[in-house]
Length: 427
Ligand code: SF4
Image 1 (cartoon, helix red, strand yellow):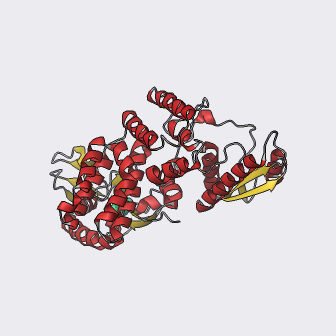
Image 2 (cartoon, helix red, strand yellow):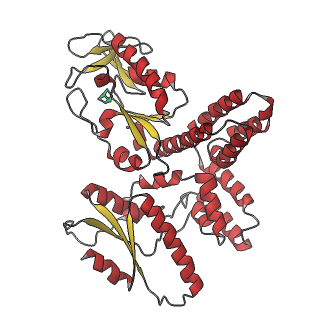
Image 3 (cartoon, rainbow, N blue to C red):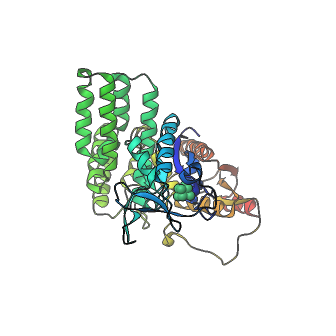
């Protein structure tokens, strides 16, 4: 798909049997979900440095800043061999133009944080960095990195996804001719994202771009990239999001009706009081600020909001979202029947994102290793519907079908009473 770009990854996380004991550490979120949006470049330092599978396991010992890589039982020191290989490998990786790297946690070769380092008394302290991970981070200080363990935290995951997508857009921008016009264009498209992480960086970077003509273009690009990645390392907060939302509302003040403005201000208050989430719908039915913007009467608002602010990153948040148990209701105890697909009956929520039921269906399809089929039943006699309503709905369904297709999901729209249409595909 259009968004595919390269991310480095510790090979065992892809299910490759490269661990010391011939095992793997397959992470299905990384392969099945994030893997839809990125192309992985797998690296296994211990195998690539020639230690074979199976092999004796390693550990880090000595000074946490310059630890030695030593085999667990025979106590052979392989640090120099691993360091030499790592220096060569990071230079090779330059050509891959990676937008991020996902490391295997706790590994003496691949762990990026809190790896055990044993002192002279044999006591472990979780303060080290794996030999290859350190070489990578020193060689590519601006490339976003995370490990599989930390990515289980939804906030860290969201932040990493934003970082890698932004890095991808930045790399696309670098591929164009470096000049003021292209930098201004990038900044205009990403400035609200930057603001949601750091109003301070938003101001500094705005000034940097405004004064850009005073410095050499290469220096300007370097400083901008440094600030961009610094900004995205800072976490977003409700207060920062409200600030951004007020800016967004300012952009659309001419298109929004008085009622819509009033309604948005009330939703901002609900969001501030944590009664609604930023994106999507509260289980009690109230929708959050982004949903209200997206549903404003002017379709241009939706288009600009998503193009200029989110730039597609949200899609990944929602494909990876966990479904809260209170959202799930089993209607029977039956096992899944044999068949070619998992059926998702789309009716009320006609959208390919922000849709918990759809995401749950995708998860079930992945689990059962079947395709997902989405069906929609269209009636030609909705009460009080007029041609304008039908046009609006059909345009929306066309967009939804295209969005589903971009995720590899087939959608069928059949004329008929909706429950009968759904049943006909479920039988
Ligand atoms: S943690 Fe790193 S070195 Fe160990 S098996 Fe995985 S990729 Fe290879």
